[in-house]
Amino acid sequence: MKHLLSIDDLSVDDINTLFETAGEMHDVQSRQVKKLPALRGRTVINLFFEDSTRTRSSFEIAGKWLSADTINITGKGSSTSKGESLRDTVLTVCAMGVDALVMRHSASGAARQVSQWVDASVINAGDGTHEHPTQALLDAYTLQRRLGSLEGRHVAVVGDLTHSRVFRSNIQCLTKLGAEVTVVAPPTLMPSGVEAWSKSAGFATSYDLDEVLGGGSGGPDAVMMLRVQRERMSGAFFPSAREYTVGYGLTRERLGKLKPDTPICHPGPMNRGLEIAPEAADAAASAVLDQVSAGVAVRMSVLYHLLAGEEAA
Ligand code: NCD
Image 1 (cartoon, rainbow, N blue to C red):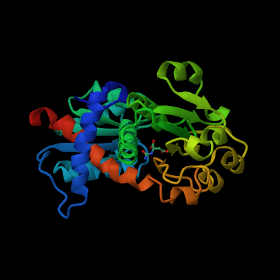
Image 2 (image 1 turned 120 degrees about the vertical axis):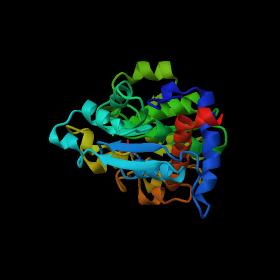
Image 3 (image 1 turned 30 degrees about the vertical axis):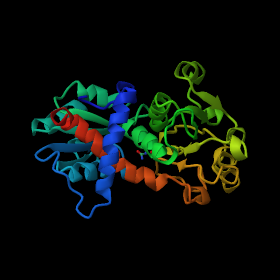
């Protein structure tokens, strides 16, 4: 495996191998000395043209714990703000001798395009509304640690699906691992063409969150809430924040319908009070912070397999 651009590029075996290594990497997190020599002498550049807290720092920490030299470049402070093209920026950065380029960009397909220009391994850390493969991997890894195998488990993915690259990667990852997925959104935030897509990819769609959450034992085995991505909205997708919450928020009342140990996921950043109530975000069964710590382990695993995997095998 040279690049990680899409979940589509991974087989079930690849995903399981990544999870196995992530499990070993996870143990490093609880050690006092969090350092493995695996990527000593390697250089990883985080090239982020969009804002990020957890993904960027998680890749940076993952690289550092594997002893790689990790450098961050953001769009705002780089020469792209002086008008340099994406191609010139990545060729410039890679001319310095880079082994891996972790890239986030607002254009769907940007990471794949860059992978055709450079010799370095390219990891897609989010491309527009298209994909965010390491987020889906860490989500599935987190759920597997909670639920065991995802085969036949029912996962509800709820929220702003239209603008969500997390959803697009998660659909592929969860269904590959055998989960039954129902996606829930208001009609205005349900991606166009979802009917045909859901049939071919094998997931269900719903506009009724209460029905999907059901009550008692009939509810989903896990709930994944997605952020309302206001920065990607050019018009009004729902009448008011209040109406969105009433129809599609994981409110205190809806939390009460879930089995108490149902993992509640959110990739972050959360709009507390809009798509998720504080009671749900902070519930005992919330997996939100587990997702963050799993993120480092999964990204260590990805970097390791892309940069050292073949030598090590
Ligand atoms: C997601 C992203 O950037 O796509 N966040 C993340 O990586 N943790 C989801 C989001 O921004 O809502």
